[in-house]
Image (cartoon, rainbow, N blue to C red):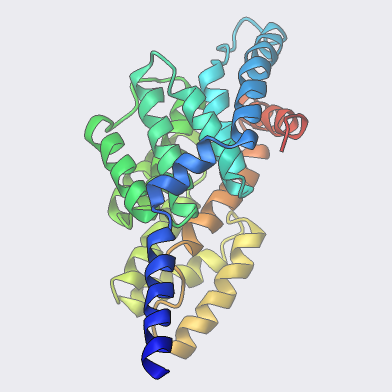
Length: 276
């Protein structure tokens, strides 16, 4: 009887293991879903005309927006909102661009969303392909360069390449005047490299800096207490990129650059009208 029960258990485990879907299968299932297909078709039909209307209202002195950058930032908004089907759809729409920078940023966006889904093997492959071709933006237009630096800065954190991330956040700071993502990434790099006191000191400086968003300062105070209590890195690999993504988005909505803030707020309004 015991032998039969053991055999049955082995067969059950074998079936369960064989039925477990791979990361690639889960990704393909997501991008074959009704939600993905419906959203992608709606976004493809909606974003272009919306950007055309937006550009028609701009003064001649302001550079018109390109719809592929709208798709990239919409994908970023959906990733922050934990809507992977929509984020993948926007990445795929952006990758249809003839602009090399846009196509590789689309890969970085896709990698970020894959990391958020826990598909780390797929994400690393996608991120590596972007890394092989993309090093710095060719564009000098602020909203294009800002989009580039955000996506690459976040993607590098997910890749656990904090030094690489700092490079992109330095560019982001130059474009926007927002310096805390660079400083925070630098502090997190110290903590993860076991330079605990050095990292804690940087956290404390940031937590007292009025230029740092209040929501972030509150989190830092909590993290300082936790790290001092436990003596090391206490966060999941997804904690910091998620936090930075969310707070950066809110910062851009309130940016002192009127075109940038108007663009992000327009996309936020457009996102609410798209199927979710």
